[in-house]
Length: 324
Ligand code: ADP
Ligand code: MG
Image (cartoon, helix red, strand yellow):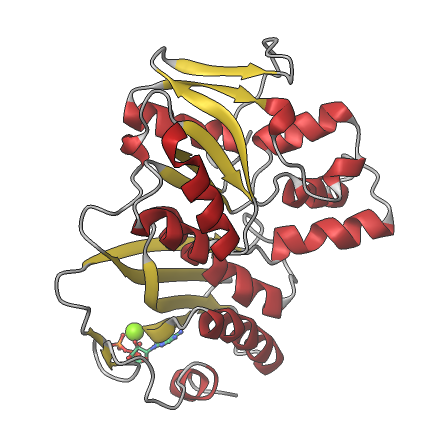
């Protein structure tokens, strides 16, 4: 049986040198960061809880990926460059096969973004994965939720709804063909944090407000509207459906693109005059973007169809406490 220290050493402590701005990594009471002088540090935590955020018995490689991906997604939504992260892990037992898969999934994504694991905590308990990420950005460049302005375009990165469609398949809400499932499931289990796009949108700066869509677009966009004291009109038929959802019926497409969940795409606003700059940043980041609405002075979110006709879809975002 692995001791706690062996476990950390074997699965999480890697050979240094790592990043130059990590002055001290795993092994002491604290890690030490040496951020670029004059930059601000962006910090965010996200926790994944068994039976709440993932099914018991979920694939450990994909869990390792997702636990870090949802955190990197927050850095992306702020326009911050990833530096490092900590990992607080509660495990029911020291299962080496599980730890091997989990750490491989975790480090595959970490290495892709040059984000270094610098510490954490390990304890016995019901499976629970909490990561805190650290990134940096130039003061004044953060893509804050309160920065949307009337007249801004509303943009979405990538596609929406396939993660929710995969979940609908598991829940037997929808009958999915094996092909549709194979296409949709990676969007649920292996989300892609839009780090390069977030950096591009913040650097120039191009975008005003941004957030990552984790609980469904309609609910999450509501956070930008509230923080910015503005309203919006959203063209539901312009929302880019994921490839599996695109083959489902129109009503389901509307529902899952507008209020799915687990998309981890960016929703951002930018001035009309910056449309070309948005498209250029998207091309540089190799991430497609779609214009889906407009920020307005009148409060509230107005959903319309492709002809501008108001829609009442009775949609709300995902709320972990109300469970709807
Ligand atoms: P402490 O008793 O100070 O909490 P620990 O004995 O828990 O320290 O951890 C020893 C070292 O291992 C620390 O540097 C800590 O940050 C690191 N560590 C513990 N758990 C993890 C983990 N799951 N991933 C990465 N580093 C970890
Ligand atoms: Mg500890």
